[in-house]
View 1 (cartoon, rainbow, N blue to C red):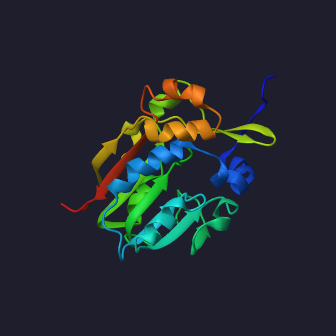
View 2: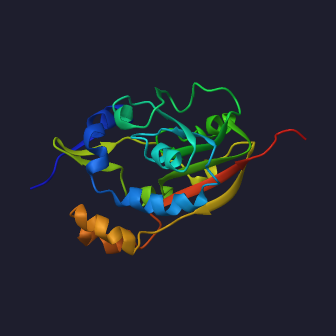
View 3: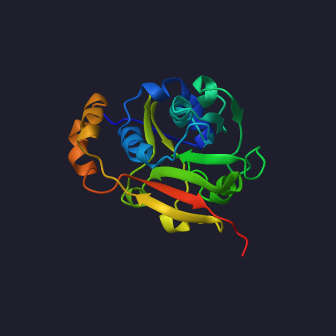
Amino acid sequence: MSTSVTTLSPMDAYRLLARDYDRIPNPMLALEQRTMTPLFPSLRGACVVDAAAGTGRWASYCGSQGAGTIALDFCEEMLSGAPRPVAVADINRLPLPDAIVDVTICAFAIGYAPTCLPELARITRIGGTVLVSDVHPDAIRRGWTRRFSHPIGVIEVKHHPYTIEDLVAPDLQLDCLEEPRFGEPEREVFAKAGKLEAFEEAARRPALFVARWIKGSTKA
């Protein structure tokens, strides 16, 4: 018996997914967490913006490390359990002044807003860090989709194709690019999700990327 697939806009999809988003075993989140965590600078006393924060996973982590955080997302329902303060905002038009943030994070949202990197750079101070993760564009080209299980069936979220080379902003210097594959830590998450049979094939190539940029001065 085939499972119905409903394709929705990001807003419509995440409104439906918000309630159970953190309860669903997700190997992508597990892989991203173990890849991105070592790339953070010192967070104690830092100002951090978790842009496209969803449920505020990274805002929670940064707050636990002594940072002051702001979680922003376009979906109010996703922000319901995020650490305060929060604001409903479009990642392409963040309601923040220029150059006020030490660390700006954008996790699993570039595929919905692939031209947002200059806006992330705008709010980041000179010398500050911009951290971005997403499903690897090569995985998307191989047929991977942004799908989630839901009581109504499988929800597929619309997204925009892009390449990592497209992610540029004039005042950001790429400092680190990680392209990890699933490993043994994620095998258990696949099992909990009832998808252990897919692990070996999924682990053959990079599943996501994590990029770290440092903001420099645009002045000569």
